Length: 312
Image (cartoon, rainbow, N blue to C red; front, side, top):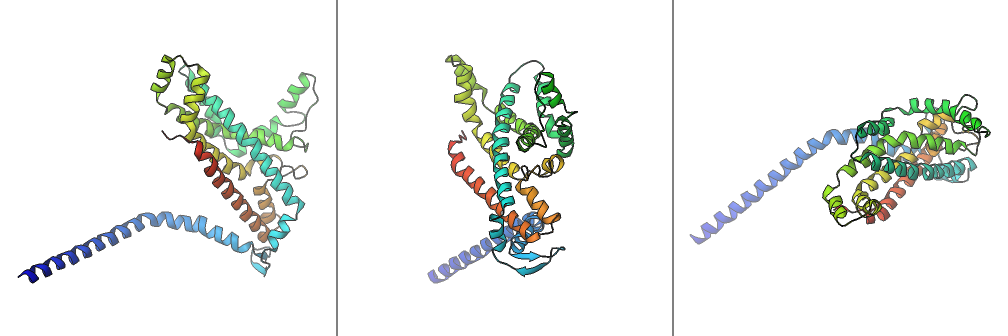
């Protein structure tokens, strides 16, 4: 009798384990079915293009993009010995240096002002975020008129105060700065909205407690606002870095990489190599380098920046 009971218990355990395994398989299949649409989209529009770009970077291609000769790492060697590419790399890093801190600082300043409980503040919030609803092409046309050497309002303003006009988009000293200014203006709306949302999520009791203790406005900004806003700032800075490295539209509309390749950023250089010079192998190699740069910058941002993030 005891042996029969033991066997029954063993059979029950085996049946239970079989049922658990079957349930796990069913859950796995259901999970994969939910993920399948995303996996298909990512495979078609992300993974395959990335693999294809890496593949083409090791070849020379004809005008149609078909591979002709395997050259290995020669495309990468030629790129890093090309003065045009090195100039493009330098301009890209300068552009990132100009635009990212400028966008963050101005957006944070506007968000702090717009977070105040004042009458009619909703109108200013709408104005500050309005650039988010303007396309890059339309904004570039607007800035093209502002930067015009004779009809532009900027030069007219300079001449009105007795200063000489500037070739904003034609002078190599000013071209990259001009594009950076227009880019900061274009990015203000999105960055402002994200930071304003982060400010409004901060618990008001923290400010009330600080006011009871007699804390000044600057003290509250430094000790409460910035630390509590650090997760939002971390997100905004990371996204701004990535977007700055991928800038294309305003370069194409305003300067087309000139003058003297001063605004020939990496993405525009890739576009020129692929769709104007039909050098798909070289363009793919540049795209791989850009991907590695963005990846390293993002990892560095997570490594160094996340230490100063306070999630509570």
